[in-house]
Image (cartoon, rainbow, N blue to C red; front, side, top):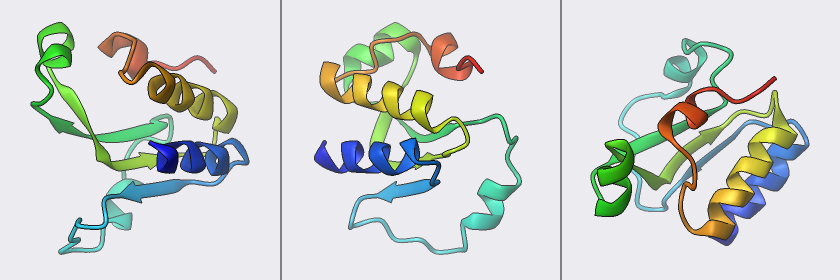
Length: 102
């Protein structure tokens, strides 16, 4: 999870960071997709169905191997990512993830 903390540090300075596993294969350009998304979305995660505990609680899990973190609210996004890493889980509900405070 050190790579997530390094990415969070970059985000805290206002950079957008796309973090992928080294085994990810991008078959099409992905930047046009992300640029079309609402500007108020700060984190994009790939949904997953494992591990089972988050799936039971919020209906899905997060694949930490494909994440886009936007730097517009850098300090708040970085704090959330750092909290998620330190607790080794999301630690919050789906509604909290979907609406970060301004």
